[in-house]
Structure formats: structure tokens, C-alpha cells
Length: 384
Image (tube, rainbow, N blue to C red; front, side):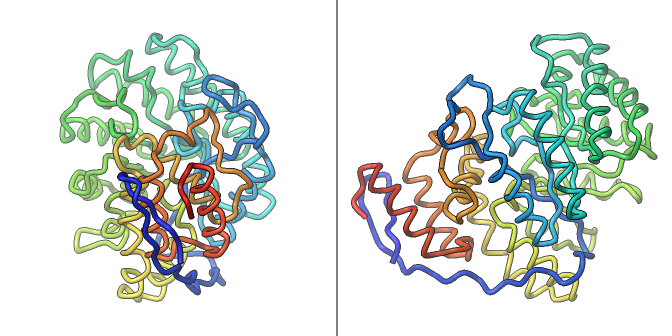
């Protein structure tokens, strides 16, 4: 049995379920390209308090990436899941990119890396400075040997006045790219500063700008990652993309239907949720490779409730749930996070994550998860 706790302080016990009998793929995943956006692990005894420079446990951080690669997944690194703009400072970001690129080469693992402008200290800069900042990180990433995800920039959101400003900045940055990149549209649920990204709060108008950016540089765009938590908007943009540009869903609420697809097509994936659900993601795509859509739905369908809990409002604190599950599943020694972000979710919220993970098979080592969770409850003042 495993103990749960609610907001009133009442406890209950449910049966601890066994881990699913998933197997690692014998060949590369074929029907979908899937990246899991990985988190970072701090040293347990370091001063990872709010405002302090990130001090990472490199062994655990990189071992988690190898865990994802071992399931046939690609890794999306130095993204918002790795606490970009929420505790992962520029120096740690640069080291993460360098180390992850080296580890990916060592095993032939697929890797894409976030490129942003967040190393610039000034809050407000000119459009020319935004372009220069993007290019600086772009060249650093490409020199490290990693492929690029061109992330949404807070600096650009502050500096741009029109849709044409976005077109200009992206055109110049894409021209400097040595290989096609993935464009990232991160919605305001993940970052409130990006509510007018691509020049409008209206999704249809912003989508039009995004599609113009792609049309202006078709040979420099490999795909688009949409993280708006709006399945209809994603399908609308997806329907207007021309090969080889692909849609990578970043919708942690609706990924099952978007990846599974319908008569209008399907999305590939670049998801923070899959950092918490790597074995499920792999097994589900293996089912699609075998053209077994019923098995796909059976494997991945039940995970969406867990993902919705992890990404519940305020959504930008979802990283806490990802790291918490990583700890429960034995991928890191402690529950702490860079910047003290492990305190961003309540005990009942975490208890619901435990319940839903237990229901969908998200506890990879159930006995270890129970032991760690019950210890966590006790030090939090709840008898277990």
C-alpha cells in the first residue's frame, strides 16, 4: 500500500501497482521523432537557493540523459524544463550544453539544445542586440556539435513592436544557422512575458507571422515546437507546414491525440512530460511503429492525467513535478532543485502526482518510490 494525503490533512492508502513490463527498443524509433526535454539535478549539499548560481550534480544530470537515450528517445536540453530563466544561469547553461553534446556523441544519442538570449543581463535591449545575442548562443551550440531549438526570447518580446520586427530578427538569425533549426513557440502559461509573442495575443495572427518566418527561410527550419496548450491551434499550424518542416508538439495536456494523429496528420514530440514518462513514450512509439494504435492508446492514454497534474497552474512550476518523479524513480539522490524550486508545489499536489503515477505505471521502481514518498511525508509532518 502507499499513503496519500489531501489538502485537509486526511490520509488514505491505495494499492501499490507494479511497474509496466516495457522493453527498450531493439531498433531506432521510426514512426515519430520524440525528444524528452530533460531537467537538471543539483548537488545535494550545494547552495542552490533562490538567486544563487546553479551548482549541478553532473553525474546524476548526465545519467538521466543516458536513461532517456537508452529508451530510444532524443533529448532536448537547456530548455525551459532545465530551468532556463528559473535558476539555470548562463554559465551553467553553457557547461550543460557542452557536457550533454559530448555525452550524446559518446552513445550516438539524438540531441537538440535551446538557444536563447538570456545571457544578456540588461532587461531591455535593441532588436540588433537581440540578433547578436541569439547568434552568440547559436554559434556556441553549433560549435559544441548540437542541433538547435531557437527558443522564444523575452528580450525580443520586450523589444518588438510589430510582427515585422519578429520577421526581421528571425530572418537574420536563421541566416546565420549552419543547419536547419526547430522554432519554439512558448505560450504565456509557461512564461507570462511571452503573451504577445510573434506580435499578437491573437493566436491566428501570431501563427500567420510564424508561418511567414518559415516561408522566408524554408531551408533553415526543420520544425516548429508549439507549447500553447491549445490542440486546435497546433493542428491549424500543422496543416499549413510543408515538408520537410515538421510539427513537434509541446502540448503537455493533449499530446496523446496530437502524436497519435488523425485524418489531418500527426505531430512529432518535444515534451517536458516525457522526461517524467520516458519508458511510456518509448513503448507507445514502438506500438505505432508496429501499427498497433490500440496499444499506443492503451500505453500513453492513461499518462495524460498525470501530465495535466504536473503542468497544472501555475504551469511554469511543472519542473517541480518532473524532478520529484525523477527522485521517486531513483534517478537522483535528493529531491532538491536549482533555485530552491522543489518548494514550488504543495504536499497535496505532490500526493496527487504520486496517485496518478501509481495508476498509470509511472513509478518505475514502485518499492523505492513508496519508501522515498513515505519518508518525505514523515519529514513533512504526516504519518505514513
